Length: 471
Ligand SMILES: *[C@@H]1O[C@H](CO)[C@@H](O)[C@H](O)[C@H]1NC(C)=O
Ligand SMILES: *[C@@H]1O[C@H](CO)[C@@H](O)[C@H](O)[C@H]1NC(C)=O
Ligand SMILES: *[C@@H]1O[C@H](CO)[C@@H](O)[C@H](O)[C@H]1NC(C)=O
Ligand SMILES: *[C@@H]1O[C@H](CO)[C@@H](O)[C@H](O)[C@H]1NC(C)=O
Image (cartoon, rainbow, N blue to C red):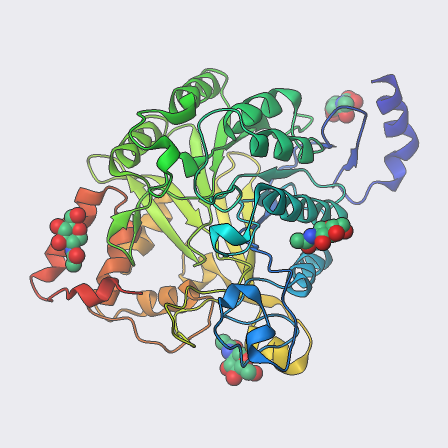
């Protein structure tokens, strides 16, 4: 501590305007000490980087990347293709641009999925760990002074999706990789089940509210995870979560929940991402602690969307943000080109330093076609959410107003929502009638029964052919 104070005095003049500084001391995570500023802060969110290190701009379309799974890639350029996962060049261009835009965010959220979409037999635990280690160092290099809160994705394991609710090699080795960022206490639960909680280590004044990050391993609830099938509370994570939230409530903290696989409905597949019983159990915890949980942030879908959590009376009590992927890869079902792919994206959240409510999000994207054409990755802003939809902020009440507008048939809000859903990949692709309802209902309802009720309401005027659900 003495040494820290000395450094504070010696170095106080070299601080960048109000951002504080970071230091690393042996055996402790990277700490960012800052006075909590009044007004507004910002933090980055990146997700679903999915590296394909085999990617090359080959003249032979079948030699471009392994993740095209044998399909010829005819549009290969330096920054990737919609038939392939991310080349290193795409990942580096994203991190470089983020650093150029905001090198000193309050923190950075990284919600998982590093390895490529390859058949189980083509990967291994070693390959998964290799990719995660390399991304960890790439992020540390780009943001050496920023505290990063990571979460595990369903691909961050081998075989994919099969995460266990107990100690395993991946949790233990990945925990080691992340020790720059996580406290010993956080690492202890991480090594047991891939989840943790940690306060944002600010130097608080007495009357300011602490902000706590809870990073969950929701892969344990993901339907394809057979290793947890039938378990009521794999890893004891839900019991742990209730304990953490009760303590946060008691101690007057606010919480951001982050994870990879989101709760609620996957509109393309007419089902919840989690097994249905756990989806309900999880939602019930989120509702019980709605006064503590400010918001939740996930990845997994590769699309840009959000959900509004309602209580049993229908009042909005929570918000769920799903950030789009860095990878442009899209499951191709044997087809060469699909209009439903996404451009690569990352985002910056603006939030209040008083109550941590989300004020805005700035979505950045790369027009991949254009970047490959010009051989230059011109990442730029796609939209600013509050202004685009004419919202006061992005707190649950404001999001609920937007969510209702998304149900207006042929409405302007929904057209924008769907354009950004695909990160402007197919800006003029229509999504009307049943296509609109499957998405608008997913935004408004996270319970499967409520979702079905919402669809049924629209079905009175509109038949819902099952084709709506086929991606
Ligand atoms: C990760 O980095 C190591 C060391 O630089 C390198 O040998 C390896 O090929 C990299 N792996 C991937 C998947 O990029
Ligand atoms: C925390 O803030 C207080 C009051 O602003 C200051 O006196 C103290 O030195 C700070 N402590 C650290 C460790 O930065
Ligand atoms: C992306 O770039 C291509 C090629 O330059 C262009 O035709 C297209 O309009 C761009 N899309 C958007 C949404 O800017
Ligand atoms: C969607 O799922 C619900 C309940 O699981 C089922 O009743 C309904 O028929 C399904 N809809 C379609 C179009 O498959």
